[in-house]
Structure formats: structure tokens, C-alpha cells
Length: 238
Image 1 (cartoon, rainbow, N blue to C red):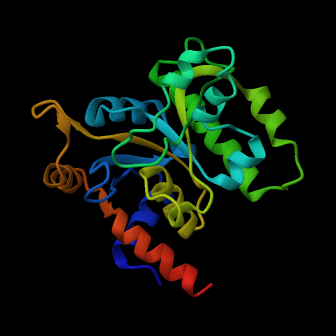
Image 2 (image 1 turned 180 degrees about the horizontal axis):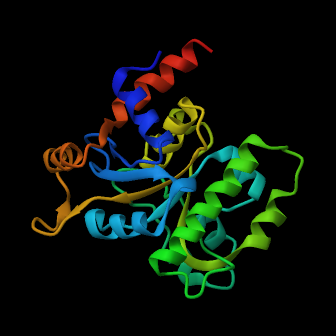
């Protein structure tokens, strides 16, 4: 059985609530506000903008994005080097806490207007989460790439993050941590996340302040270390 805190985090996600997730010391050292993408409503986008303030992104499990045939953004840029040499000059080879970025393309749902309003972004995030759910739990032989194209356009206002193959065995970012937590709980592994920032310090919100926020709003706070412990424990036992 998962630890009590991991169980509580999974139950909260399943109920459509936010949780707070801290990666670890020596990495980004940031706390993200996290929720299942399929549960997002306009008021949730507003809350992420107001209470977190970072970049609102959607993390996608590798079993899903492979079926959608999505590229990592750095791979997309690499294919354009011959025509746009500046993209080669912009290679992200100096990220101090990681080997590569998880960013993919940006999208809007085709039923949005500008795509940036709380209502529009909520629609894009929620519908992407639902498509991810159908893709993950559905027939792998379906043409999910065409389904994605029928419902979404790119570029847009919602950033996609691709969880790396092998998940936490290969990378321990918020992207992998959130979809791994969903996987542990047999939930839809498409999540929305947003870094919590601090306007007073001009830095990421401190762990202590994040914990105070969690307590004030009755939200579960979970660490990357707790998720990794549960993930690898389950892997060892098959």
C-alpha cells in the first residue's frame, strides 16, 4: 500500500483537487500547483495565475504522446537547423539542473477564440486531458494523432511537456513526477502544473511558504522523494 501522504495526494487528484508538489534539493527546488488536466475549469486557471504565477503547462505520459507522435521542441528545432541556423545557436545545452527540456509544442483547442483567456485555456487543458485519457486507456490501434489534429491547433497558449521514456528511471522533473503519481494511483496521467512564485523575494515560493499555503487551503503537499520511493517500490515488486 502507498504511504499515507501518497494515498492522500492520489485521493485529492481523483476528487479534482489541487495538490502541491516539490521536486527536490539540488534540482529546480520549486513547488508546483498540480491537478489532473481533465478536471480543469476556468476558475482553476485563474487560481494558477493568481496563486502560483508560473507557466501553466500540461504534462503528458509517454504512452500517450508516442501515440500522438508529438516531438520534443528541441528535436523540432534540430530538424530546422539547415534553414534556420539561429536555432542551432539556441541549443539548451547549459541547463544547470537537467540534460534537456521537456517542452513540446503549444496548442489551443479549435473551439477557442484567442486561446489565452481562463475559459479558453481551461477548455484546451480539459479536452486534452480527456483525449489523453481515451488514448491511454483505449485501443492503441486507433489513429489518435488524427484525433489530436481534429480537436487542437498549434501554436497556441497551452504548453505541452512530454514525460521522458522510462519516467523516473531517466528523469525526475515535475513532468515525470506528476504523471508517475497519476500512474501509481491508476489515474489519467495527463496533468496540469504551474510553478509557485514569490513576488516579494522574486524567486520560487519557499517550501515553508508552500506548506503554509497547503495548510491554509487544505491541500496535500507531497515531495518528489515520496513519489520516487513509492514508484521504485512498486517497480521492485512488479
